[in-house]
Length: 245
Image (cartoon, rainbow, N blue to C red):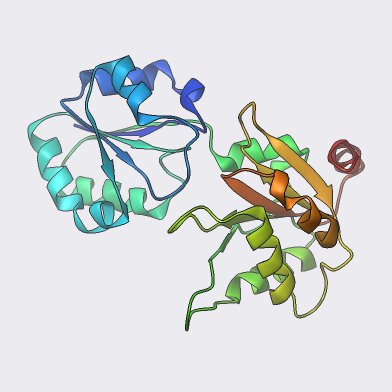
């Protein structure tokens, strides 16, 4: 049996189902690359009395056969920050398990795709999510900006997820990249939303124009994200005033 277990945004998000899966498993892993998790592996180990092994991207993408083989012989849990099905890597794990006739149980949890509603924007009005990569030498993709433009054209909000490798991208980094990539200058005077630690007591949300957000960017922790609002319902406008003062 293979358990794919969401552990939410922090330790307090752990469900009884999640704890039960860990306790009943002979092997427990936690993946460390899809998102920063505001919790501590050591606390989970104390809670469940299980040794938890950390998986990086290579372990998950290239070593999945080893994990599936283990799960054929005993119960194995993979802990995933947020919800286990918000990363394509984990869908691949499920498909591979299905080919091996290996049963998989999925345990869901809060993720950025649900807690972003704390901004006051309506979830069903979000368009395609954008992943913002950190530019590197000979690597500076800009296709993500076209997706933002497309969402704006249709009046939809855009959730911008920030790069987490080799370390989580900061709000300051993200806003500067967005500003430099906005060739149409559609965002110069537009209020956007900067968020960090959503779904936790450390949550910080601010809605302002880019220049002002850059000035206060040092206040934000990680994990962080950016939201580009589309057309606003009057209730959304009212909600955003909470983060504009």
